Length: 158
Image (cartoon, rainbow, N blue to C red):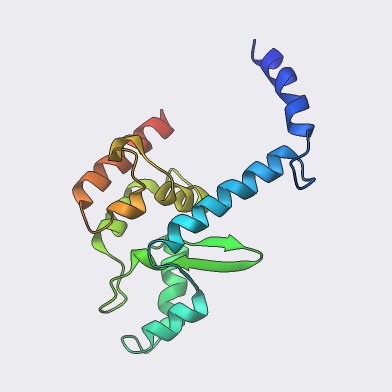
């Protein structure tokens, strides 16, 4: 049954979008654009260099802190055209610390989702959150956000 479904789906993937790109590539680009739009609506994105500049006032070694956050997966990052971007929603504007609600969610999800999946999770409408995006809920109801992350981790792991 599944191979038959894949055979029927294959011609669809080879069709071209209105811009001349393969449909699957075009759809992926639209999904990425929607993710960027969600982040732009909630503070925007910055490069690691931009974040470093913000942290200079509160940390004597901002690049080291950012590198530790990235390696430990303590922050959400995404790659775009070879540049690592950091969504601003996850930081307290007061001292540029990572918001507690984001930390709790990342602890819940980082062993289940890769970096791209984590970035997409925060920007995708979620049924556990009444179809709001998790980025919309950060700081509003962090307990509800954590429960959504737990449910999605459970579903993803099976």
